[in-house]
Image (cartoon, rainbow, N blue to C red):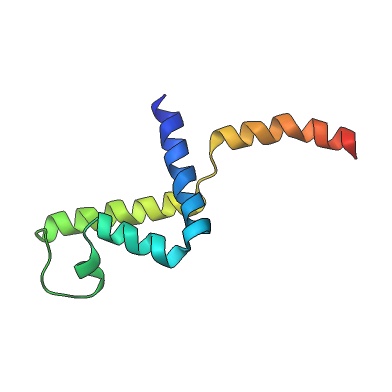
Length: 89
């Protein structure tokens, strides 16, 4: 169950990148992780140095997952649909 919700969360984030645009979504994510000041090189940060580095690491990990993740249930659907598509051709 947890794997499916994780897959759907990433699929929703990937869809939001397409619908809302990457600039808007990345701005929302940096705000969600409270990293706006960190990216703007502002000396004021809501976290101390260790927490800030940890939040940045989690943010980059999420970005990598969003851009390079291909949900497993989509792969299963493709393998199920492929024989049908080859039959139609």
